[in-house]
Image (tube, rainbow, N blue to C red; front, top):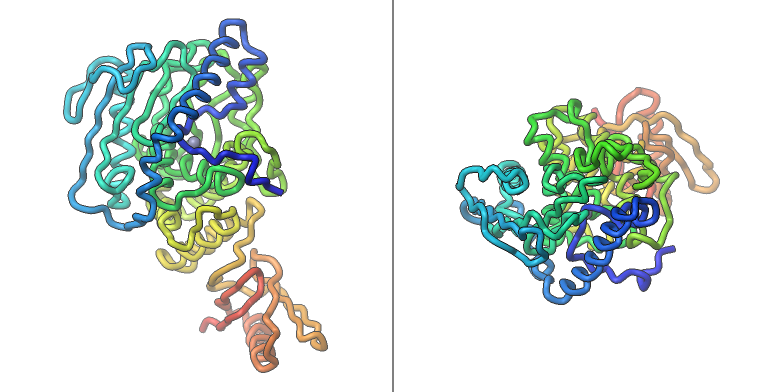
Length: 433
Ligand SMILES: [Zn+2]
């Protein structure tokens, strides 16, 4: 069981490279690379300690779960260079509307922050990270051989990488979508950064980071590669990306940087106390659910599937300590509200395929495949298409026999039913005409 005391639950800054990768390099890399990885780890710890008290920024704005952004779009990118120092924000090199500078890190940061703003504004009417027009600030060329990128709650910071294992950190546009989405989550659901809520927090950043990339490239859900951080590894590393939403656990397998530890199913959930309870590891499970849902629904991931996930993030019923089950349940509810039964079925199936059966809310247009009763115990179980066994509530004889009769006739006639289930117990039911 989780031990909340184990984790500090400190959130800012949030780094794209999880500690297990840097620790692996610090153990297995060349002498120079070990030193750089150790320095990056030590630096990240220092920044964390320094920023914790002062960078509560977005967290204080939690509670503004507005669906529509206020006023007109305020898209204001401000890019600085640290000139390989660690002073922030550094020297201003490109402001909103200015032409490309020719410095690839500057221009990639500008484009990536812009693509992230555009996804949130064009699709969801969200006016920047805080929905109040927050400036998008980025500092490139941070540190020397610095193997990470992070968002500290007020700005993004990109290292150049060590050049041996890591390329520059602006190379992957989804890294920016990922990091800035941590700001969106902090300003909305405020998911705590440990165990399952933490893994959901990480997954939501991958979900929207991937949408930023797919939309920037004009790719449908079926055409996209669903990789997170493709291009970050140099050719020296046996890997394609930091994570794969389509096939968690397969992004890299290398003697120096280690092996992708992500599970793709609840049966392989990793119980650990490192990385705040495996927040970068178990995020593979909800990541795959989003991938499966987006592909099953079809079209672009940022349309129906992305909107279901976004509305769930804004849903006041989503608590800051939500478990995978809670999030899955709410995506099913929102899918039905927004797009109806067939899209909801795709979402329910996606979660089922990663080992999570939606167990609270309406299941609509479901076929009854099997029916099993123990009359004397006032007890009945039904097998609902793709959703497993559900129990009928039996506190009232009249309701019990009425439900049983309806289910029997629905099964016999091949009609579908809509049912409200709570913790796998059917509490309301009607047969569809
Ligand atoms: Zn993250």
